[in-house]
Image 1 (cartoon, rainbow, N blue to C red):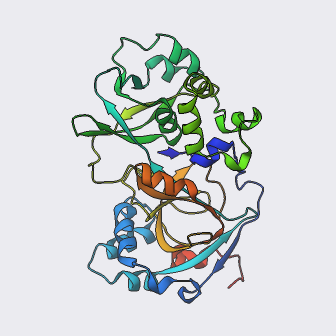
Image 2 (image 1 turned 135 degrees about the vertical axis):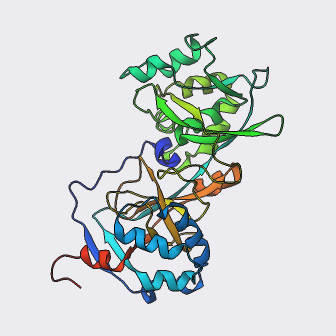
Image 3 (image 1 turned 180 degrees about the horizontal axis):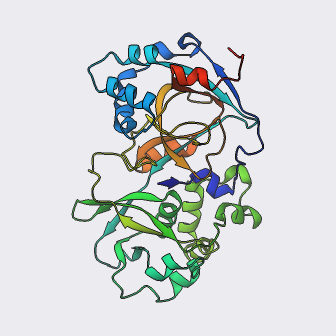
Length: 344
């Protein structure tokens, strides 16, 4: 699954990739990691086990076999890994993301009237298909059985499309998960930037909650604002993931709240443990596992922490935009192999 960072999407933020940057690797000791001894390493080991079997390189597979045994988690990481600080020319930045949870129904009603669509074949085959406005105001998708469910809030549906996956709580008490199936091929256009351009808000004021409230206060103008973005995302049911598990990450395994992180795989191997030292209002010192990616996650010190499912997780994730540092835990032989010749 490819995830977009909500804050970056709303504000139209982009980050350049590693092509023109110089990368520096520094091996640290575990004593150099602030708060290492106080973390719950067992929780990190549980998350690591979920995806380590999917790592193909022999050194990772050997460690995965060891991780399957009953083992002291802290000792496991200290014995077989070394923390490596990977730096490029980008500034460190930590943000958060979550799995949206919407209210919905399997049948349309007066309340539940906004459809969550599967991808039509003609959109899959086209490089660029019709725009959001044409989809929402026309009838090209109606009567074709492409609806997965209907939800009660067009703004929540819009944000679901930005996140790329989510959960729909049904009236009967059940739920269904949906995942990204494709798009209409149009470039994303930020509605946060549009609100700023119109002079309605300043840049520092724009957030998902601010946009949601503005659209609800101005329903007619609000629907037009959402259609300013011509990009439209289609979904697929994800029924094989148990409801108690997290959504699927880039490794096609369920991710774990506050133990899974999205990274740039150009620098950090997917499945690798990473030690996060995030500063800001709520400092974080924790061992997580790199199990996801994101279109706005570019750079050696760029990471997006998964907060969980639902509104509370979304509120916490939306507040996070802090500096700090991230160390990748690499198998010992691999850690020393990435150093330039003659470096220690």
